[in-house]
Image (cartoon, rainbow, N blue to C red; front, top):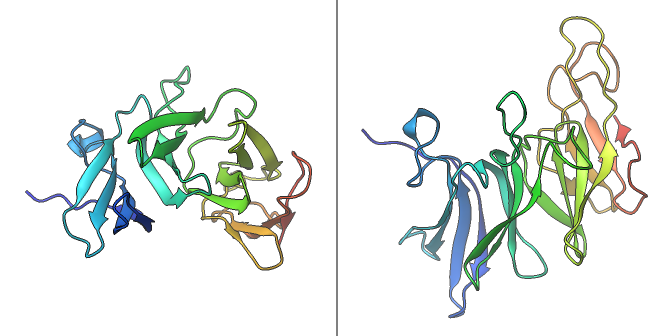
Length: 224
């Protein structure tokens, strides 16, 4: 039986031999057995023609599983992405995902942040990757918040929280589940999922979130 893999995002990277390569993430697959026996996912690359696919890293659930969103080539020459599961284990046995780093020159993988723990316990299970909105500063969204990762000191911190509130049985937290983007006005934009209670408590259709990456931490983003 053939299994189709979800390739969540591809980017072009110049290799050491100056040949262009396509790099991306597979949400399932690899050699480790995962949910439904499909594997925990992998970082993959191909040559410039899309042939000769290779798995350069296979996720193992402990250090992340089921990567989501874009794979970003940051200004320091390293690749960054997120996984939806893996990493920190909660009391109920659930895992909240990780922010990971991969060095294509040294072929080294490392987890730089565990979601659902530390200074941002409500930031968990990211459905999107990260962007380098300011030089040396990565921004991503997970659950009800936007986080920032500083490439210089390798610290991850909470950048903004989307107001969480409930009214009625159909209301859900204002979870950000779309990829963030930086627009020409300097602001970061994202979207909340359906049934989110913003900007109004009804009809729970979700909204566009605007955030200034240059503002102090823990400020509420503007909802539209």
